[in-house]
Length: 138
Image 1 (tube, rainbow, N blue to C red):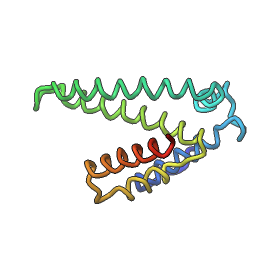
Image 2: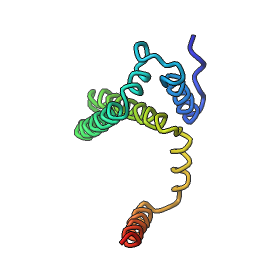
Image 3: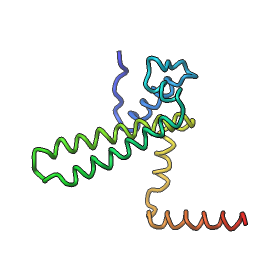
Image 4: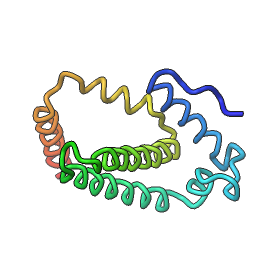
């Protein structure tokens, strides 16, 4: 029997992260029975490749939706395709987080930290910090 569905989106991510954590080979996950255990058992190159594949599929689905005629019957199918591909991407990213001992809460905290900060300013700050660290090495 499945556990009850979480009420809030962050609960959904936390629940899925807990399931992924339980499927780690070190926690008894069986690569012969669990896709997550198999991904983690085979190592980062495998799930990182999946992230790249899924990201590409998100791009393609988004482009397809962009070129769908508004109001046409194809819109619903294109929207569903994008959502499905995004779910695949997020899932594989959650596997990567678990591999590195991180949780969705870590990403959500970073997004909260960035809230109210201009993306342009944030990028400029990161570039300045990178330049400082490079000149400090010389």
